[in-house]
Image (cartoon, rainbow, N blue to C red; front, side, top):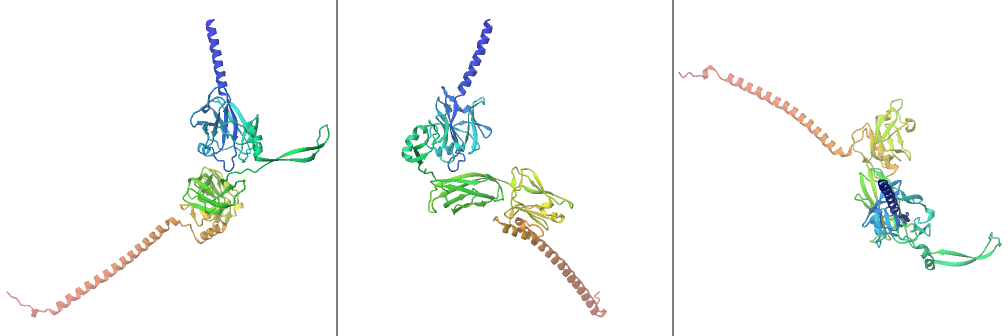
Length: 487
C-alpha cells in the first residue's frame, strides 16, 4: 500500500511539474508590431512582447513564427524577462539601435524575411513549440507607412505612436495630445436621425489633425538577384517632410563595384554588373548639389549570379527548332534578347523566362528559322552582348559590342555579325596577329633559304668550272723543252 502511494505521489508530482512548467512558459504575449516603417523598412521591423506572468522567464528559449518558418531568439545581453516587463524582437540589431538610440531594455535578434504590409500573421511559440500568442493584422488597422506601429490598447489593436519596451500609453495621452496637435471646431449641421424622438439639429465636432512632419526617407527599388552581363532596372523613392516624392536634389549612387554616379533628378535607369558576386548598392540623397552631408541614405545587397544560357541542341531539316538551357540555380529573363541565325533573326518577346536548370525549345513556327539558320546561331542579350553561339567556338562570353541598352545598338551588333563569317574573340586578337606574323616570317625564311641554296650552287659551279679551265691553260703552255734533267 505504501508503494502504491509513493507511485501515486510521484505521478501527481510529475503532472504538477509539467503543469507548472507549462504555466511558467505561457506568459509572453505580443503587444506591439512595427511592420511598415516610413521610407525603407528593410531590416527595421520589430515586435514587442510582454511577460504577463508572475515569474521571470527566459525568452531565448521561445520562438517567433513568421514566413511559415520558425525563428530563434538571440539575446543581446540578458535573456531573463522579469514579470510584467517588455522585450523587443528585431530583424537587425544595428538598424534598430540606429532608429532607437535611447533604448535600453531587453533586445533579441531574430531573422525573418519581412512582414507583409497588407495582410500577415505572426505567432509566439513556447519551448515546446506550442503557439501561445498569435496576431493577424492588415494595413487597415493602422501603421501603414505613417510612422505608427500597431499595438494592443484597451484590448484592441490600433495604430499609435511606437513605444518599444514600455507600456502602450497612447490611449491615455491621446486627449492631451489633441489639445496641441489638432484644431477642433464646432459646426452646426442638420442631420436626420433615426431615433424614436425624430430628427433635429445637433452640433457635430469635427477634428482636423495638423499634417505630420516626417523625416526625409530614401528607399532603393530594384531586384535583389540579377544576372551578370544583363542590365536590370534601378529606381528609388525619396519622400520629403510631408511624404511628398522629391524629384530633384543630389542623388549619389554607389554600385559597390568601383563605380559611383550622381544625378540632379530622380530618374529610373538600368545598370549592368559584369561579374558575379555580392555587391552593396547604396543611395545618398542631398537637398542641393552643394551639400556635403546626406539627408537620407539607403542600401541593398545585390546578388549577381553568372549567366549560364547555352544552346544545348538544334533540330533537323524537318523540325529546325532551337533548344536553350539555363545551367544556373536562378531563373533568367530573356526580355529583348535576339537570336541570330544564318539567314533569319528572332527577337525574344517580353516575359520569356528560363527556369533554373531547365530547358526550353523554340519552334521554327515561332522563330521562322529553317535548316540553313542552324549552321550558325548567335544569341545576344538586350544590350547587344553575345552570350552564346552554335556551333560552340569556345569563345569567352560576353563580349560587348555596346554598353547601352537600346535596339539600335543591338542592331549594330547584328550588322557586324553579318559582315563576319565567324565570331572573333577580341581577347585573342593580339595573339592572332602575332601568329600571323610568325607565319609570314617563317615563309620568308624558307624563301630566303631556298634562294640562298640556289645561289650557293651557282657560285660553286662557277668556281669549279673556272678551276678546270685554269688547269688546262697551264698544261698547254708547258713542253718538253722547258724541262731539264739534273741527274
